[in-house]
Image 1: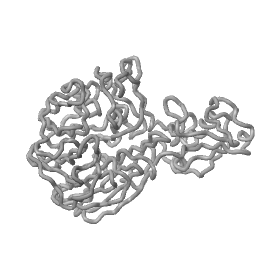
Image 2: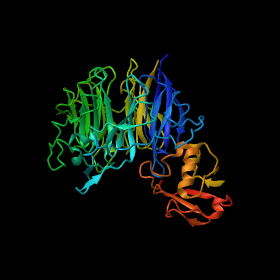
Image 3: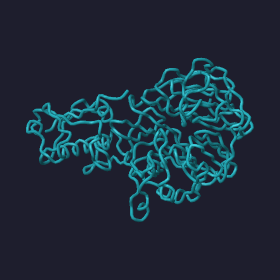
Image 4: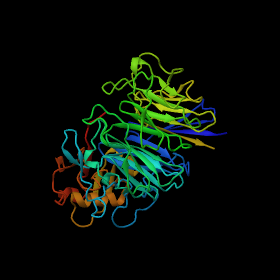
Length: 393
Length: 98
C-alpha cells in the first residue's frame, strides 16, 4: 500500500509524520534538531529517501542537513560523522552561502533598498526554502535571505549563487518585508528544465528560461496599493506561488493582499480573490489531479496575523479562483487565532488527493479527501514553519 | 592540550562531550583554537564564526579564568593556564530568546 511522509519544519525542530494510504493513523518522529529553527524540509522527487533540511539559529547561524534514509539519520553534507576529517582546512562548506562578488558576474550586485529607503548591502541570514531538482537527487536549489538563489550539484556540499537573478537590474529596488527580504518560493518546470520561477518578499515573482543564467520580473497585473507605484515592475510582496505540475503554464499566487492567477507562465496576472472573506494570506496550493482546484487560508489582515472571526477555514475553489467555498469540517470554528505560514501547506498525489497544513499554534491538519474533512495529525508541536509531503509507493 | 567547553547545541551537532580536548600547533590563540576545533569537528564550521567574515557570532562569547575574552584580538595569546590545559576555554551562548 502507498505511504505518505509529511515533513514538518517548526521553530524548535523538525518532525516526520508517516501513515499508510488511508492516512488515518500516524506515526510521529522527532524532534529532529531540537531547539533549532527548521525553516524547510523537503524530499527529492528523484530519490524519496534523500531529504534536505534548513537548520538555523540566532546563535549559531545556518546549517544544511541531509538524510539519505528518509529522515531516520541526518548529517551535514560533506561532514558525515563517521568520516574522519581530512587534514587541512575544514571542509564544511555546506553552510557557506557566499554572494557572488566576482568581477565577471557579481560586480553590480551591491545593495538593495532598506526599510528606510536607503541602500543596504546584501547580508546572508538564512535559507528559507530548499527545492530538490526533479531528476537528480544531488542537485538542490536554496532560496535565501537576503534574497538570492543558490544551487548545489553535489548533494548540498557546496553552493553557488545563480547571480543573474540579483544582477538583472532591479535588485537595488528590492526591499525586505516584515519577515525579512527572503526568496521563499522556487518552482521547477517539469516540462522544461530551462524554466523556473522564484518569488521574493518584497520584490515579486521572477522567471528564468535559461536554467538560471538570466531572469526577468513577471509582475504585470499585480497591484499593491501600499507601494509608491502600485503597478511597479518590482516591489510587490508576493507571499507564495503554486503550480500543478501537469499544467506548468498556470500559476496561482497569494500576494500580501490579493489572490492571483496567471495563464501565461507569469507574463500577466489576474485577480481571483472573488468571494474570499479576506484576500490577505500566506499559503496557496493546487490539487494534485484537478488543476483548477486551489486552496488558500485567508488571514484577517497584515496587522493581525490570524484567521478571521476565530474560525480556521481553508477555502477551496474548484473553478480556478473567484468562487470559493469554506472548508470547515474538523477544523476549529471558534476561539481560534492561528496563522498558516507561506510554506506550510502541501498536497499528496494519492488518487484521493490529501491536503496538509500546519499552524502557528503547532497543529498539523490533514484531509484525505481533498479538503472535505479534516483531522489533526498532531496538535501541540512548536509553531509550524513549513509542511511538505512525499507520496511513497 | 587545550580544553574547550561547548554549548549544548554545538555538542549535539559535533556528537561530542561537553568538554573536548585539542592539540594546537604553535601559540594558543582564539584563532588557532577555533581553527583546531573546526578541523576536528568540521560540522561546527560557521557556527561559532561567520563563514565569510570569520567574525564571532554576536550571541556567542569566549570566557576563560572568569574573564571575558570575546573582544580580545583573535591572535592574542590565551592565558598560560588555558594553553597548558589547566583551565578550559568556554564557548558560551547568550541566555536569550525563547
